[in-house]
Amino acid sequence: SQQGEEDPQALSIQEGENATMNCSYKTSINNLQWYRQNSGRGLVHLILIRSNEREKHSGRLRVTLDTSKKSSSLLITASRAADTASYFCATATMDSSYKLIFGSGTRLLVRP
Amino acid sequence: DTAVSQTPKYLVTQMGNDKSIKCEQNLGHDTMYWYKQDSKKFLKIMFSYNNKELIINETVPNRFSPKSPDKAHLNLHINSLELGDSAVYFCASSQARTGAPYEQYFGPGTRLTVT
Image (cartoon, rainbow over all chains, first blue to last red; front, side, top):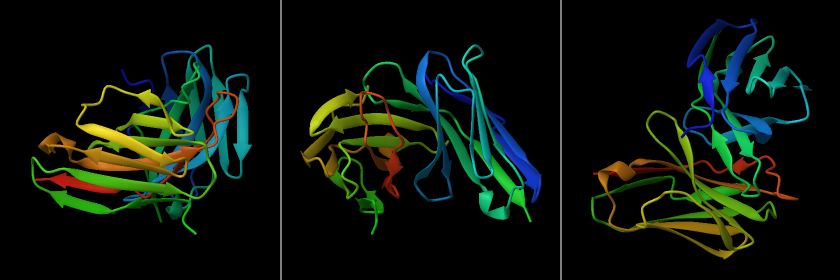
């Protein structure tokens, strides 16, 4: 079954506001990754957080990981219209299969 | 230069036909993947090859057959296409060291429409 569930499914905010997306998963993980997908395009890797890390930053992105709750959040600060996209979390399983299991995604609309 | 490329970008075909999608990566990665994204944007792994060896083979109909002639190429052949095969197919690659998945680089996708 699907590993990651994301919340909310859709989010609409004004430019300049912060956007927070949440991801929950079911089994133990090696790492968790966030990807962005613009309409009609492939996915682009944003950030990877390992299971022994709790928080990671990259530019305007902040990711947290709580392995006890099996959840992660992605915060985009000072959003821009160009941030409009779908955002997916993906969990890497503990085995050696190199497999990523993707969540259902959050569609983010940033209004100018 | 495009890191992960796929051809064709669009593919419209009739039920029962056989078609192939090609993927090439110039990143020097060891591992390549095929994903299927359905109309609800749900992305599911289908296959993965590491150094030309099949390492992931999810529950996919055997009408789907991947082939990796070398580690820079991973093709997907689909026999006897069905309406339910309509989706966007993504190729991806990664440099998976020490058994731990690293970030994946995705191609632009191939939108397959079966009529």
